[in-house]
Picture: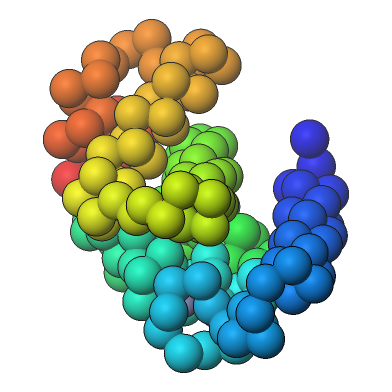
Length: 162
Ligand SMILES: [Zn+2]
């Protein structure tokens, strides 16, 4: 699916979800579900929130990269998916990781809303590692490395020497 279409669909679902929450619950529901006191927005939830968005910092550490998060979802996808300084054959890996991370944060938000349950950042990073490996394996991009390799040395698995 086209990444721009995914982002537009995500923004629509997010807006619809926010409107539903406003009608059904409390006026404070215009604020982030992470209870960080910031008005809810897609960009805040996915990248800036101290509760949900912080999983990205763990992902950057896992990948061993420095990344300054831009202020829009589309710019974030573009910059992360085309990691500057790394060969273009790594881009498909980074795009998969990006989508898995967004998916993980989205599911975590739903767990908070519907189950009042939040996992810690280490558990979320574990999910990102596992699901990204599964998605890469399903697309036959993982034939030369196993899950343990991916867990410990993702850049080497992408073909980048450290
Ligand atoms: Zn927040």
